[in-house]
Length: 262
Image 1 (tube, one colour):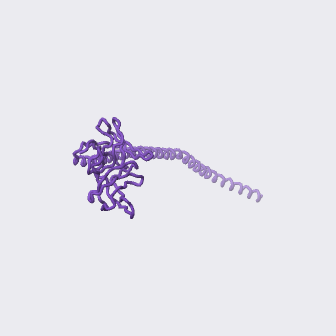
Image 2: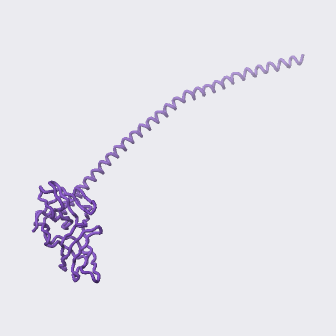
């Protein structure tokens, strides 16, 4: 009898405990489910916000890229304009230099532009944009910045070929300004050489050589170069000298052609 009563008591106590535990579990489960639902509903909202943030960033980057491209284009245009103005200034300086020389001339000096250069075999030439219709003729003197650089070799109607002084076939009679020593200025692959000078000629370093009055189409007194060194050896029948010209032929853009002899 006691055991039955005890059994009934334990059974009743267990039922009470179960009745108390079940609502708590349901409440806990309810809270857990609510949190899960909240997180699931919040997730799309966060993703949407992140998506809009990335779109804004991409739009800003695209705008910056377009602005940068526009700045690059503007910079290139400005650089091109600076280069153009620099070239105009260079051409003006070259023209002023030649025109200053022209003011000192009594000859009919013709300004010509260099339009080409030739170097075939032994030939060393410049091509200019003036020809026979401008009064250019074979043998006329060609001058740059006051110094003789060559003679007209051939001419067509609108252009001419200039044989430079350092052409191996170039030969120009000259005289030294100080010692008045006569000689022949010869061209060559190594530069200009003065030959056929009398052994007793007193050539001096840095002495200027000018054209003599011998060539038919070249007036006397045109500077051609300066003495750089004198070569004289015992037993040599003539004296020679190395001559240098101050003109950089490779950079010439304008020259004068003298169409008459004084």
